[in-house]
Length: 313
Image (cartoon, rainbow, N blue to C red; front, side, top):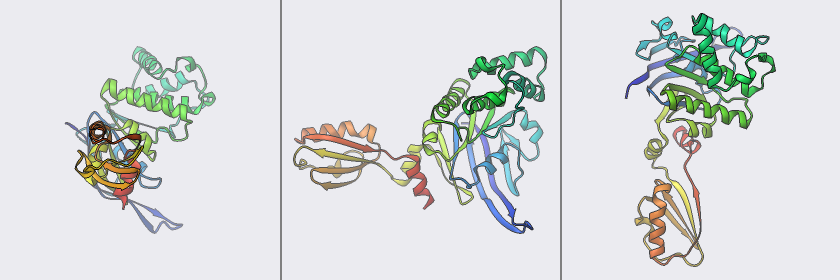
């Protein structure tokens, strides 16, 4: 798989205090490789350095040390060339409040070098893509927070980028608007194969959107990969509680496929499974064959919050 982003030895610090003498490291010798064509999430709590990291990758901020290669280009030496191939959208996207949706898109389209029929056609395409037709003549200041976020995505795509950065794309949105934004992001990647790098502190959102994630903590990437791969690294399993109508059957629960741990607390048996969705049907058949009378099954799957907590310890 091609590489979209390669970071080596990245360091960045800010200087705080009235005299700006107190040095506060944010990124510490960070290394990261992101494959092309996926949605990749940079996860961490507020203040972890997510915006700093994405700003460096998007050529908006210079690191103190390290190398940054994006789409095969040196982001420090070839920033102007790279900016023609990438774009960024955030909840803090700037627009002219008095201009309409269409006027704002035309304004930014001109900044990206579009003119005449090419500009008109591209504005029409992104307006349709994000279903903004009904608001194309509405001033920006009258839009809801969800519509403003859709406009920010439309603006970021007007230049047809190969790689899109999204900084907290659903921050501040109501649940309905946030879900609509997530659907648009997933559809964009699915239909075009565009590489999308997003930051979020919302672990549930990352589970729904991202093919891979990187956990950012203490200025470094603590771990990277898909949820199954990260789960396998820690041998962390799903917790399954089996409640029996009577006494649990006499059987070797530890020997069942996928069981990492087990505990008997009659009339319940608690199992830790490597993958509950694929293992449970076979386990239920074995319990039935042993004469067990299951009355209830409760499953608590490992999520990104569990994984982040484990990797942060």
